[in-house]
Image (cartoon, rainbow, N blue to C red; front, side, top):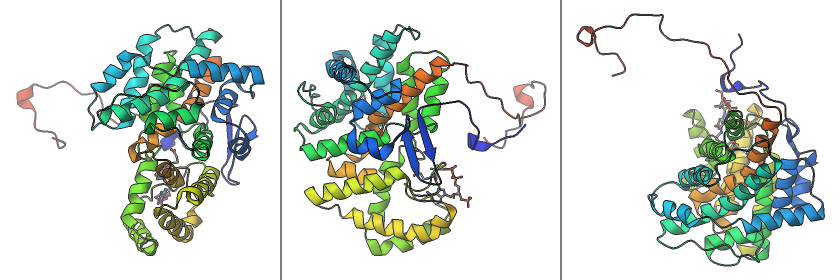
Length: 381
Ligand code: CMC
């Protein structure tokens, strides 16, 4: 039996959703190059493409946008539940709990009914941003702001978060960030979603399990840590000594490295250009020069091992310029990635077999139970 830790290089499903060429640094959603979608599409259109496999025609898109707009509000019960969450709790934990709670409201599991699937997709895509924004205001002791019907999806999220209608350029750049983060084949959270989906549970449990997986610092949580790291470095001159020390101490550089890429993540390149667009309009973030100095220094030290900036390296600088607090960077990632998770949920249901891998047992040989008095303390206690 071959054992590959982390399932590296082991195909565990067939999928027609997203393709990555990690040597060329190319990424497609349903065959469309990501850069093309990020320039020309919008998040809801891209989500439709990912989930149903084709770009929507104008009528389908209008209907999808309308349905999402109609379902943005969350029940007062969900808001009241969030008011009981500790204000010091991480917003990803709040989001995981809130997403799971939707299963209490929509408990029917008609997963072979296309209308049930459509409604669940609409609800999750519509309500997750509202829940993220609501927790942000609730933890500050304020009442959540209701969605504004005349605002488009991304504009409305920034409005619910900041209580101001966003500048159109800022809203467009945010929408492009959502497109960039919407899907990335079988990453840890998507695998988690597919494993949960394979039990035929409800889609709210599928998304809640994926949110929990995305939160970790080796996955989506890295975007928060990148900014903390840049601030610790402090200035461009300190990038080389920081890098040398981290490598000597065998510490990972956050926002670098990827299981799939041996070159710079194409999403990082686009996010870097979006950051520059924002800085040209709204003023530069001083940490940008630190980030560029670190990238340059890392190219020499880590480049030969195929370790380059990933999607999380520049996204935090973009989000911070948009006025998004640091601990909401990963919830914002989830707002977008829910599209990919739902695409994989649908695909999994289309050819389902429950995930039940095997293991190589390394534990004790069979032995007999002993009386407590005759036991000696084990080493771990
Ligand atoms: N900094 C320094 N060295 C690194 C880094 C890094 N960021 N990433 C990998 N390496 C080295 C690692 O030390 C190991 O070296 P050696 O072979 O000498 O022991 C080698 O590269 C392979 O690393 P690995 O951890 O076995 O690789 P992996 O494919 O299991 O992990 C990763 C991929 C993304 C978890 C890892 O690169 C990492 O921890 N990066 C930092 C955290 C991060 O930025 N995560 C976001 C990932 S992309 C977006 C997302 O998934 O949300």
